[in-house]
Length: 543
Image 1 (spheres, one colour):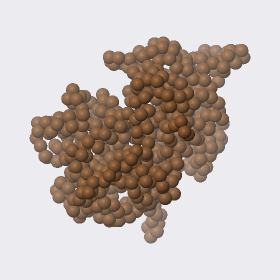
Image 2: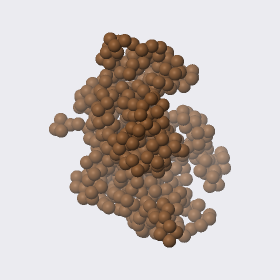
Image 3: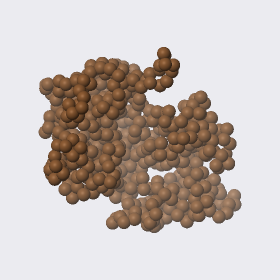
Image 4: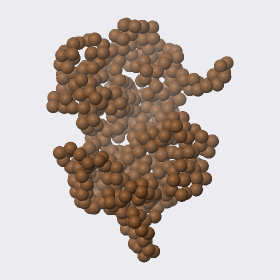
């Protein structure tokens, strides 16, 4: 479909538009309100029907701003110059009605978090039917679309919260492809998914794009995934196009220093050698830990979700224990249970020789200071209204361990230890880059001087270069402070090079354990083999 905003073109014009680029950017400049420098600074890019282009680059380079500019979703007061054409129309010059039609019918969107598009009060079926009806399409296609992404018709009346992350992302793909748009924009669509589900989601998305003849613009920091699913790759730096070529050419023969660093960092994380475990005392020990969630059923015959079902493990001082497994296997539930955020049904949690389940009141509060957590999304654990230094000092004040002045001094010391400049102390979390935000989250966890640090997907949202920096920081802090760490990740290759030992979970149980590099070479459990096979790898001359 062609959009002019005012009138329908004749047949000759329509044919010309079909051969023209779906998306064309020339010398595009975008500056956000109050920003000293433009976020996009002369970006030139084009995308034809049926093409799959990966847009990669470090955090803050402007990748997501491209999507916002194309959709006319820039904040009010933003400055935009240069050429921007989507299906022959400039979104900046369309009236609201034409712009909404362009957004709805010309572009399909798949976001990192599908819940940003899903209304928690509307069933999955109604999401699809409403989308189809709003643009004059047959609402009866809703069931067909769900089946196409691997969801049975019996789930039409389910709500978003009743779906797993992978299933919600499948629904997002069905919504994006409902009108067979000429362009699909997928902005970090697999960041929060395990590698097996991520592979399935990308396979479904690319297959649907091929069937519809849609162009795919994949915004990602995962170079291996980009190389696996896209024909071309464009590397951005500081709002400009740094390098563009076929995906294999960029990954095998990177021309620019930044691209070379990104590729090197991505190769470094692929199945590195497992470090030798230290011979130190046990600091944390779990015996048959169980976390069950009731799903309903009759009072005399309840149904349970056994998220953590009899897990036993030992963690030594200065050791990093990796926990991997598919989505829903119990990784995050285990961490949340150790932090007291999820109820524990049974078992023992021995921290430095004390059973946390037998402690109460002040004794429990003091013991839990020795166990801290770094979450996947740092903004989820940082108060957006608090400055960096106040956010780091806050745990000391909560536990009554220091006066306000003393707490701020200790916070400055910890911020320095995680490599943050003192000039950032008075900034708000949203004013920092993703890597800086994660360093603040680490500093906040360390200020109480814990013996054990829980890292729940703490680097999954970072690009390869920043991810390598944060992992190096964690390793240095571990060596300096003697920290024991539980490192939760969906990526076995990352765990292999960073963790001293790795356990694999499936359905709340430990199914395999050993050095990460050994699990990569000789996986025994079925789920481990699935995770290994699903890991996207950078191309080499030999494969």
